[in-house]
Length: 93
Image 1 (cartoon, one colour):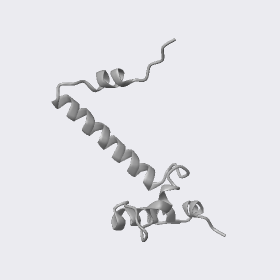
Image 2 (cartoon, rainbow, N blue to C red):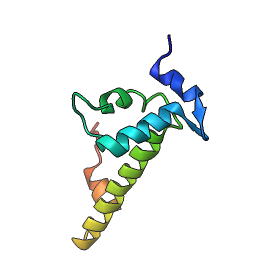
Image 3 (cartoon, one colour):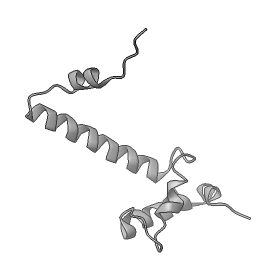
């Protein structure tokens, strides 16, 4: 029996079959959840496939969020490093 993670070993035109299915899900379902979507299945892959399209996608989205936050803080007159330092968890002994 072949599992979903085994599909990373099958390659078509330089991409794994797993990556092709992830791309299909990103394009057709916009990575949204639903009874007829593949997103829930692929969310399990993210932690296992280091070179997967999803890891690259989530890194890209995370970087966008980070950059958006930094630019928003700059518009408000705050420095991101200052905000992060002030929000950092502290322990008192």
